[in-house]
Length: 249
Image (cartoon, rainbow, N blue to C red):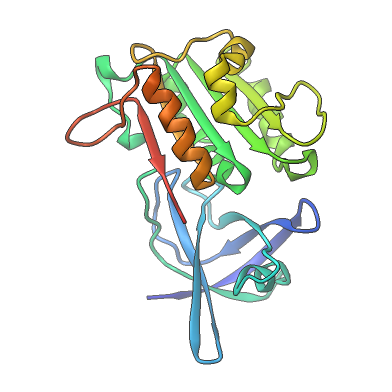
């Protein structure tokens, strides 16, 4: 099932990276979930999943995307302007949500959000709600990209730093060029070497940490492997742990 959405705004972060704000009849969703956008081309429907960046309760949905050169949908999305239409799933889905993290003694004190590229989206949605700030003493957002111009929503992140100065820690990782206060190694390497923990002056351990990972599959696999070596366990409904992941591709 699809509903027709109207583009309210397109934000171009660079020549390939963009956001769309879309007004559509989307049912109430949980921060961290994703919707699908779709077009019919040559009598075939092309659909792709995109995390919702804005928090629940908004009268629109916002997605962050990269226009892939040979992509079947993303170049068309990047060409949309206010007033244009795009088909949207009316119901968001996905398990990359704070609901999935154990509560009580298993929760821990520190929430680590590890992201690369556009996968920062679901974490921003969470950070714009009250829940992480009510449940955790410290919230660490790690945002990895290759070059600095691929960092989106920096103004929003600065607003969160100003609002939660004693709780929120932001760590940009830019691997291919210098960037102010950023680490330069990939996320799994930063954890394994201890550079990330040193940067934020916190340990990652089973007693105090919950880690959510979203991004490219290679990063997810490697980061999870490093975290398992540190004694953390994958978080499953039948066996609560400390590592929550979601793969979109």
